[in-house]
Image (tube, rainbow, N blue to C red):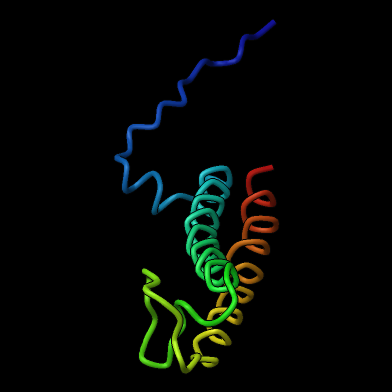
Length: 111
């Protein structure tokens, strides 16, 4: 009975070549998951900022004069445009850059 020839599966490529020029489906799936996670952190930051605004009555952070990150009292004029931009950006990021790429790109390529 003949024996199969043994051969190694060493990966002698560098970091950049392995991860950014890869044709391996598992590496591509991991890249999708990492990218979705990073964009997810940005979307969560938008959510935290919106929840900070809703924490107390009145407008504390999204003023017409500009966005603030420290509240030193309420504003007289709210900035509804910034609120709409953050809601829309949060939804677009979560749907098209986190959930769909993670499910289909990440898990679909990895498994």
